[in-house]
Length: 352
Ligand SMILES: [Zn+2]
Image 1 (cartoon, protein in one colour):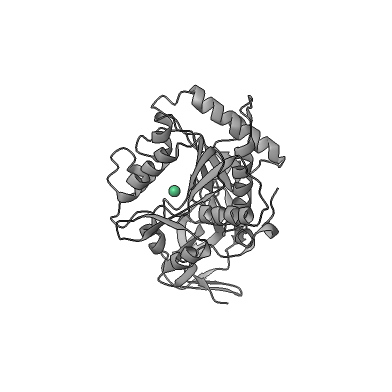
Image 2 (tube, rainbow, N blue to C red):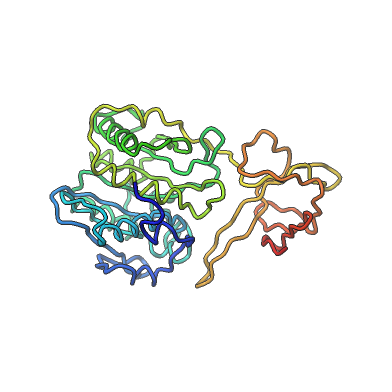
């Protein structure tokens, strides 16, 4: 298995690479332009007969896949990966207008992953045309999931989905074959699978994965997530890279490993302060990290995520808040200002 030390893109603490840096990181070819005329980048690794398509950055604030692809390219060009039979076609960021703003939606405020029936955006039309031209035996659709997702009360650092192709979510021969292949890939890595989830297979006719399955084009959804003390999603980067490589080589022999992954659940809180005195009540406060990109500035602050009796909600971290002094009103979605002993939050930043 590849480790963090095998590539700078797996080990660094960066979680966002400005688009102009990405442009010069690899000798890309430009295969088109976004609605705001930003270049859509592309490269192919290898010249084998087995065609694979991989893309990331469909949602511009989901950057783990970009690092997975940069590390794949890095390892391949340094001859650390041998994939002779394959031609791996890569688009690192299919939605560059969203990427530069670090938002979900494209420059016209359309969610690309709800446009794979109408194909009204330049970016979704580009992506589908590219996939059909490459006639891949397998596609990887790389996304990030929110920190609310957990499996057995621990953060789901990666979730997978072999999408449905219609409303009843039937296990078609194509789906079964892909489930087997992913199951065999996971087994071949020989690592514990706690923290790995299965994403809901509810049918979304306008999402790309479901659309491709309906067209008979095999694809696997990767949803990279956080783990405890790892909000840069480095664990997901490394695991995701290893699963991609394992999936290329995996057989389609029967396997139930994918079927046995627990379905991920929503509701995980990031950081809970218990028993805080607030408006003459004792309540719990949950904080959540907000990552932002504003021009060349990148940063993170803590916002108020939930207030009330949170005893039944799983959490990544808990702190006794009985001595917490709130120096500004608590407003959901807003940065916190408060003092707890030597810990001082000011407008969402820990300053002391
Ligand atoms: Zn996404």
